[in-house]
Image 1 (tube, one colour):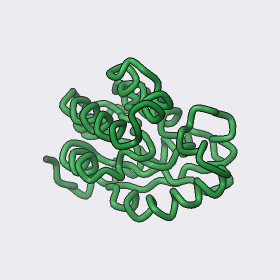
Image 2 (cartoon, rainbow, N blue to C red):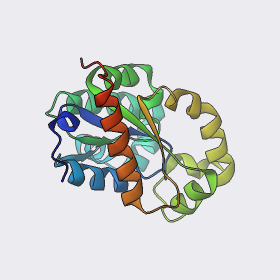
Image 3 (cartoon, helix red, strand yellow):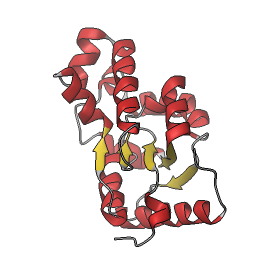
Image 4 (cartoon, one colour):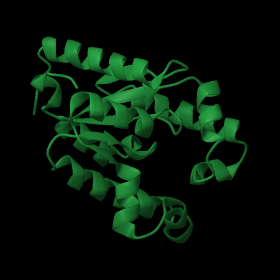
Length: 184
């Protein structure tokens, strides 16, 4: 566990495409920093009392994004933790602004082949049901990467062990703290 209080003063919000490792890396990062881990998707499901695929199917993406924004706003009012956001959460301007004000955002960026291998293992991705997974992911990358690039920190999440990505995030957080990045 990191013995650096400066790295535990604000929530760390992980953003990026599905398959980038937000949940799996987030759990390891939280452990390394001695912070709680929270998965926004799990919290949305708990609040809605239904799965994300069911929310998409029954209520539509707009209703899901609204609920997601409300859940993330509530989570950002809690003590510092590591927060894995859904792949589209940072795309909602109000959610992005909440994260900007109350957290440090970290874009976990992975190349397309890594993302494809990771998402092919799971069938609970509503947006991937809309066509060929590669084409859907490539389209999402074109739309989302310019917005994800607004995150405070960008870290490559590739083929290396998750611990290497966690170490890279911690190094980036240290550098940001040393540079005297403003706090809210």
